[in-house]
Length: 137
Image 1 (cartoon, rainbow, N blue to C red):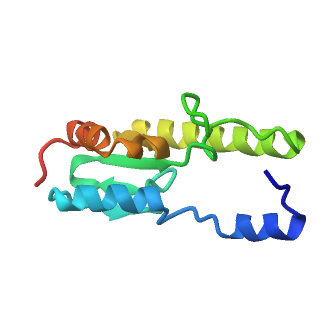
Image 2: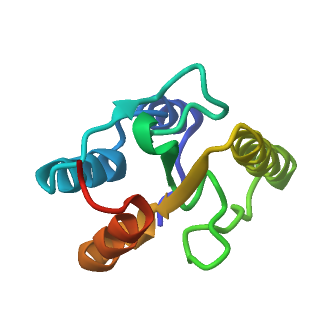
């Protein structure tokens, strides 16, 4: 694997979005096709969940395995270079996730985390989401 120079790495990092990511769009399409209707990125809820189902008081977070450090995934590992930069950054992401999820629960909301790698098995992910959400309205 070629090492990236600083300019190329910076360009790569600028391309990373926090919302409307490919995994998020994939899940949104699947759920919408089944008849589920939802709101997106509600700023008034802790953590700004990716999909919000207000009438059910349920929310779904679509997490990237790297950025949120999925423990069961190969992608959820800290890079071996610049550890002093990456480790605190990724730990902060996990702490922020935990705080947002706790705050949601305190407000009476339920949440589901869908990991990026879960979407490789769309059928299983959809089954899990349907179980979490119940029947579409």
